[in-house]
Length: 344
Image (cartoon, rainbow, N blue to C red):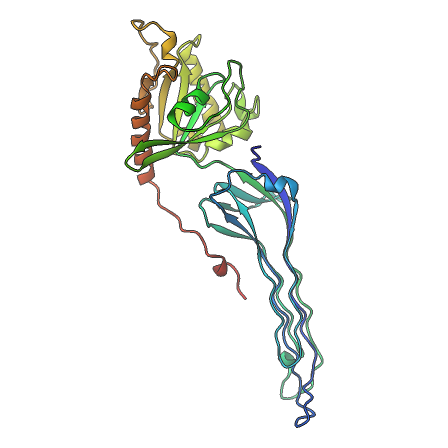
């Protein structure tokens, strides 16, 4: 089951309280205050895990809570800090505060780490309050409570190429011939009910990831059909491939509808490099001329047949060239080590 959104409650651990203690030794019956500080409560992190592809785990567990720290003790012993807990998520996950909608951060790569609930600071023991004029303090501090909040996890697939088309445009079939993915294929609309990913390999270490999303209909940017919930999955793709079936009543109108829906949903997405793929070439006679289609902003226009294999190798090489160029334009952003996110 593909789960792309989840809301969970995260609770960081409370810090340990400081101790109120006085040294009592045979040789030093009035040794003064020696109450230690409390430890730091456990924090909650979200971390990218490339082995995951869905947020399914968070459908069944909605509350994640870190442990509280130990209290301080005599002999100036500081209480042990609690362990942090980590919520693994697939790369491509956005994290927001579920109540306010505040953007907390996003996980783009395996190992990227984000602090979502900070553990409480440990309280000070009475040894910290001793001064020259206050040599026997009994004051101590309770530990601070850890942060608690509801967070929303939203997964947006990370892929190199996003296949965009109306229902029955041949997206799933093309994915199956370009990669080893085996999406559901049938001759009725909305066969694809959830996104599918596939890896297209060209040999010599060349490969790219393709995302096939459910069919886009007019008004999808407003939520019609499967709408916005799946348009979001092509937001992070580097290249778009618009699939237009040659048996369409009006291929030009179909292409313009898709471009309009993408543009109305996201102007940034509309500016991504794209190619136009005319599918189902095998339905036309070999000598029949191809439908003329105006796509002045497209990198290229190719006609293919997923059934016969015509044009598949050429379109795969084209996609690789466009993806490679798009990758060169991106600057990698290193992940943030967890130890750098918390100040003790």
